[in-house]
Image (tube, rainbow, N blue to C red; front, side, top):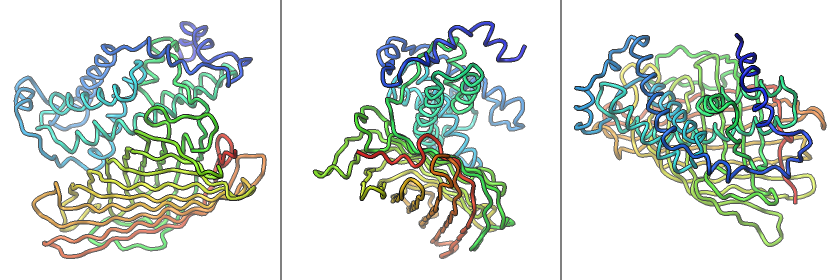
Amino acid sequence: MPAPALASTFCEERLASSLGDAATPKSQMSDFGADIEMRKRYGNAALEIVTFDVLLNQANRHWSGNSDYDNNLSTIRRNLRSHWGVDSDPFNINQLAHPYQGSVYHTLARSSGLNYWESAAYTFGGSIFWEIAGEKTRPSANDQVASGIGGSFLGEALFRMANLLLENGKGKGTADRYVREAGAALIAPGAGFNRLASCYQDPLFRSNGAEYYSRVQVGLSRSSEDDAGLSTTALKRHEAVAEFAIDYGLPGKNGYEYRVPFDYFALQAATSSANGFENVLVRGSLFARPYERLDRKYRGIWGLFGTYDYIAPQTFRVSSTGLSLGTVGQWNASDLISMQGSALFGVGYAAVGTVRSSDERDYQYGIAPQGLLGFRMVYAERLSLDLTGREYFVSRVAAAARGGHENISRLDASLTWRISEKKPHAVSIKYLGNRRDVSYPDIGSRKQTRATVGLYYTYLGHDAFATERW
């Protein structure tokens, strides 16, 4: 029987009830804070995470062709007594698959009613369990950082996005409700499983009116500069690119409070026909306080932010999980011009390396001071100029005995024109520049660069460029 028919048979009345009454104004809807608090299921969350790890181990054992998953009681006892090291699994496994695995832990806990910090602790614990009992290889600290910490940052962003999709379906038709439930489950499978298991009776995590700017971009890009350096990969000069991005909880919204972690976050993810995932970038507030200028034209937040970054142009790749101090704000310069900006500076634990190197180790880890500067100028809700610069200095601290250091910089610049004042359609021109400078005793100084220029169709979500005025 098709899934919608099953849902209709078992959960139709509850699904309709959970998605709300069209006659109820959004401003009067409860955020279900007390209801969520009453439904905390600590044991349920722990059981689901352990079960997920066991099922993942069995799937890998039977279908991956890798003996690392042939663990037993002997390997578990050995891992309990072992020192934690650094493994050399493929880059995308360690830096992309492991954080996503951690995000599943986090959303399972969040959808069991636990708050952010409780869910982050469960995510960290789930990663430890996997390192000891999920693989027969000795536990690795790099996986623990990526899954246990980076996975929590990614998981909270996905959890908020899934709930936002459901919340915006209030009062819509039955078909739309099923589509939104399916979409939310794809975004956050852990939360989707628990909603299905409860016949959609688990309350939504409300956005409380968060201002957000979301967009989907699809287009073609072409290389404008390439220096492969030590990489032996065959570069593809033309790429088809699809990207989604959201800035959630933008400063300036009257009555919006930054009470809990990730009340502000930004997520960006892009895939390319040339190399799969080109980037996954997440930053979110952990502790934030609002502020404003006396003339009330500028509002912002400052505080501590958690970050998870994965960047993989065709010649090299870098990933970092870190903490940063910073600020996000908006200035209404005039009736037509608004400016939004971000500045974050902190430190992360990063991995960086060449794609298909001829004489360089695939990648290495190190402590990485890092920074981000972002700027957006919006004119008359029709034109937007976006600039974001990132830099990572991967030091020799906590790195291999090889020594040396690396500096990676990235510039993302785009100009977006909204075609119609009343419709969400737009076109964008985007420049994306990446540069890596390497200095090691055994290979000397090297560099790699890749830059592209692209033309994109952009679909603007919510309220165009989301520049709240006050």
